[in-house]
Length: 200
Image (cartoon, rainbow, N blue to C red; front, side, top):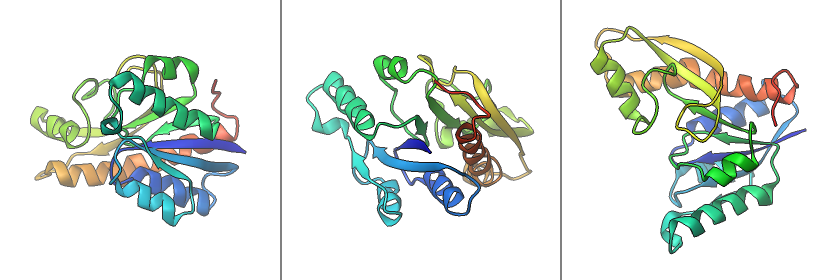
């Protein structure tokens, strides 16, 4: 049984995609052992509670400095003893010691075809605004291993999504989620659980 911890910052749509995929058998042999958010009011925490999943908030404002916050974040992950850490819209730069400790055991979903529209400052709607401003005809999503850089780790899966005439960042964000993110993130987790993608 693959034990996963899912880190989230907002609504938790990718978390819900994982929960649903486990429930309907698209992800096999996997259990979410903890959901961790850096925001106490993140709707993702409610999604976890509804699914009966252990959930905790580790908020930066509760700690006197960055280092103690990072230590608390690592502790929250360590306590769950996951085999795999899944970043599903987690808007926190991971501490280097956490990346080292969980080397090749942390994956992230990013809403573009890396190396386009990624790196520092590219998250959420900003990614889709940049794609539309550049005039590209195709975007998509990428699942990758996390390393010390921002969106620089080895790519695991990508799926392309067409950009349509008249798209707004919000419309494009929704299409990328539905057609790419919610498909390739569960598929990646399932392949890791089945031993088709090596971790650690």
